[in-house]
Image (cartoon, rainbow, N blue to C red; front, side, top):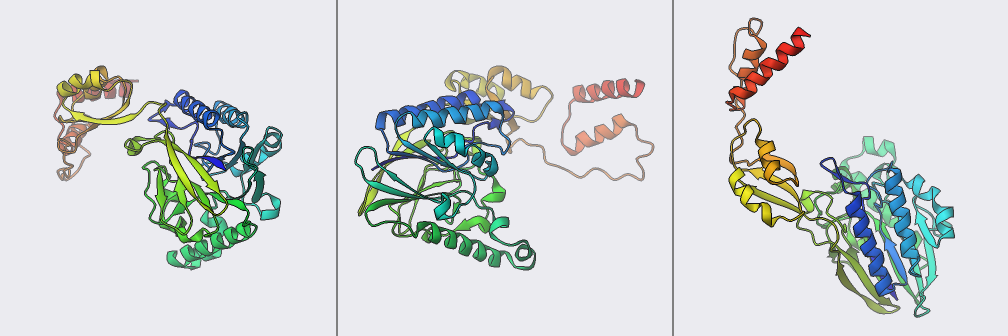
Length: 385
């Protein structure tokens, strides 16, 4: 049996206010093309289809079109909600998705109500069983009173126990003559963050050990951590990672989808297929002159720039003039002005706004008469209006 595992599309995600919907479309087209080339029996999308619980119409259109494109390859398509998704919205699409040969699971379900799915491989006729566990937040797994009265360690243990109970129930229907698969969206202890995850939902309280997954599972397809990785466990536990870096913390990640070969009684083998679409993220450093020399080497990469010069008025504009793709411009820490306490004075009542602003600039080690002149003109305009 052949499976294609992907996750964390984050369709609709912007970067420093810049829409990346066109890049996301390119990446998802490439994933559909990979599915068409390798003809998997099932495609597993392990959560975070969207970046927001209230995605735009354009984002929804892209996700629906991609899921239909994957289904048109002849594969069974299964997708679950992640922590960024709206589980109720995902479930609302279920009737239409089912008609298109796509199975969506937004909320946690019992095995007999869609939590355990059986299918047959189109190529080999092998049977597959798929246990699906969408993102389950701690506030639903742990009662509110426990969150208030118990320690973090106690609540972590409760969350662990709740997920173990859910997985045990879902996987109790695993078969000896089938390929048994778990798909979930969660944090596993010792997993490495990709760099762009939502911090509030990757903290220790939401993490579970890899031993939570049953040894009977031939493959565990996970979403949530954006770095491609396999975790040591009794069963093969894999994060596919995000196919497109969502911010500069993920610039060094290698985006892939996972092609899985599995058979009853045989350990699964996993091949990473690189994703080449989408613009890469890069961090560069230097003076304005040095950055100007780099301009011909960065291509169409989105850039985070650390300027190795002290702050001054117009510096950002100088940088973006030579590097138009610079989305973030910062002063290199080596050249950042230290924050110094303001000089004490008996009273500020007699000080003019210009004098107060001059003192503030002094606390930031900024000496630029143009900035002070601009402040004076703006203040006069506002005060005179």
